[in-house]
Length: 166
Figure 1 (tube, rainbow, N blue to C red):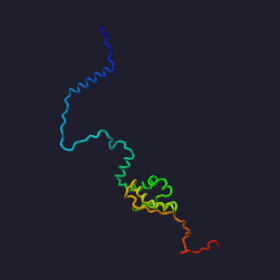
Figure 2 (cartoon, rainbow, N blue to C red):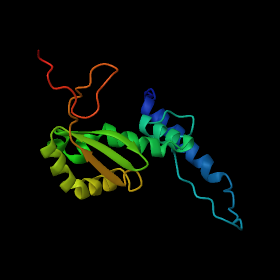
Figure 3 (cartoon, rainbow, N blue to C red):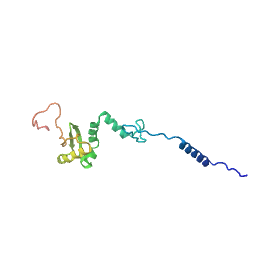
């Protein structure tokens, strides 16, 4: 008598797969009907609205929904000043205020204020390219302010008294 070998797990799995394939082939296939109208496009698996989203896309959608685009562009001018104008220029000046499209820039010296006035068209071009054309339309550069010698609530108009030492 021939000794019967115990079935190996791979043989059992192969027999089950063959039986499933045979059952699938015997089943009648559904016919596809063409439906008139726009064709439905399947995009495949993609994240849904309730799936975790990257933080950047959530912030972008919130800015769009709340219509904060103008405010974020203004914030980008002040927050990214070093990268917008370059580290050499940013080292010697800083933006002070932005109102009605006019950016007030304070330079550290009168020489740098003059230089920045000459560079104003190129600085505006950089701002238009990186932030947007409607945010900054004019650039006003001022030098450092002189010290105020006015002391107290009362002052004298004109040169005033000059003998203050004695």
